[in-house]
Image 1 (cartoon, rainbow, N blue to C red):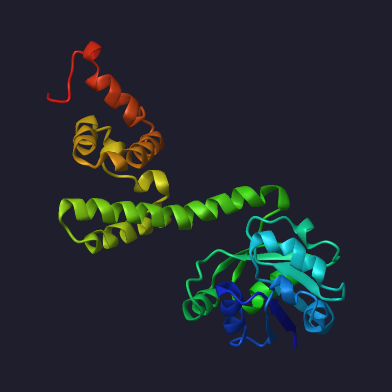
Image 2: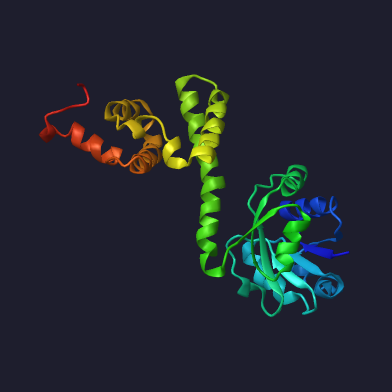
Length: 262
């Protein structure tokens, strides 16, 4: 039986421990990574008592925690999407397992880790074996592409939440409940999955409808304009059209002979 020691008692560490309880692997429990306790024998000897030690700690703590662990036979893996493997020095068996799912709490996190999740892996084969034990899909991301990969993950998760927040603010300003838009957002993601981003694109950006964009710009709070126009331009670029902010500027310019009132 493969044994795992988890270092870090945050959402990721606790979700992983809960998920491992549903597999044939054994978790030896979670160790707090607090620097004050970093020299405890159970902490420094973790790499000697387990087959795999998983560092489920903040990115900026990975190197310090790895240094505090006494070298042993265990594979030392971190859960970071952006951190390179050299942060795990001086250990020789090192790797990375980054779950490409959000882990908001222990219960949901464990469920998602066990739901055929995708994991970015690198380094020691133990990383791939851990993914297989969880029933997941492993994709390999080399060190020199790790930051780009994690940027994509941040856009997919964090930026999507920021956009949902803008939808909520605009919905409130329009006097409608924001949950009226959640099915639209969900079905749009389904379309992207099925058809790809370009074919899934609809709306004024796909049509090149400058009048509609002008109406939006006039109606919405100026505090929302920067985000709206940047993404409208990206949508227009995806559709192979002139950036809408540029088209809007040309369309409303006195030299163009047109105005937003026509």
